[in-house]
Image 1 (tube, helix red, strand yellow):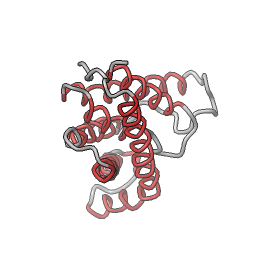
Image 2 (image 1 turned 45 degrees about the horizontal axis):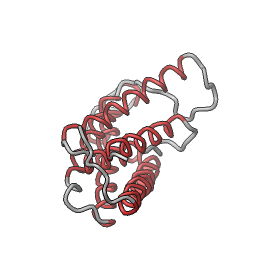
Image 3 (image 1 turned 135 degrees about the vertical axis):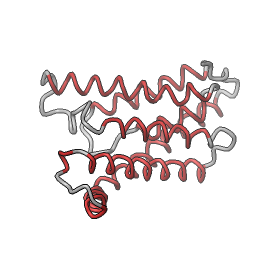
Image 4 (image 1 turned 90 degrees about the vertical axis):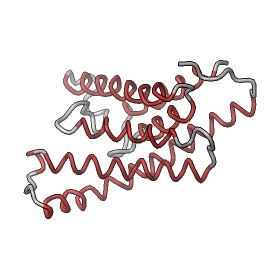
Length: 188
C-alpha cells in the first residue's frame, strides 16, 4: 500500500469527522496538519493537503448549514465566517510545526507539537474574533484580553482534540509502518 494512499485515507476519515456532532473546536485539523507535514515527501504538499481538506470540509459545512440538509445534526455547522482566515492561518502554522517532526516522531515530539498547534490556534482565532464587530469587544488591550479569557473554555477542546487525534493518526500510521515496513514513500 503506498504511503500517500494511507495518508490520504487517514486525512479523509478525519475530515469527515468534522461533519459529525462534536464539541466546539474538537476537530482533527491540527493533527491532520501535523501528520501531513511530517509524512508527505514534499514539504509543501504536507502544508497544502490540510488546507485543501479544511476548504473542502468548510464547503460541506456551508452547504449543509445553508440548505439545512442535516439541520440539527451538525454541531457548530458553519463553514465560512468573518474570521475564517485565522483558522486557515493556524492550520498552515500547524503544518509548519509538523515539519519539525519529519526527522524524529516520538510521542514527546508529537505531543509537544499538538500542544503548540493548539496554542497557536487559540491565539490566532481569538485575536481574529476580537477584530470582528461580532465580538462586541472594544479595540483595546482590555478588549483583546477579554477575547482570550472568553476563549478559554474552547481551548480545552482544541487541546484535547489535537492531542487525541494526533495520537490516533500518528499511532495508526506507526502501526501500519511496523506491520508493513516496505511502505512506498509518500509521493507528492
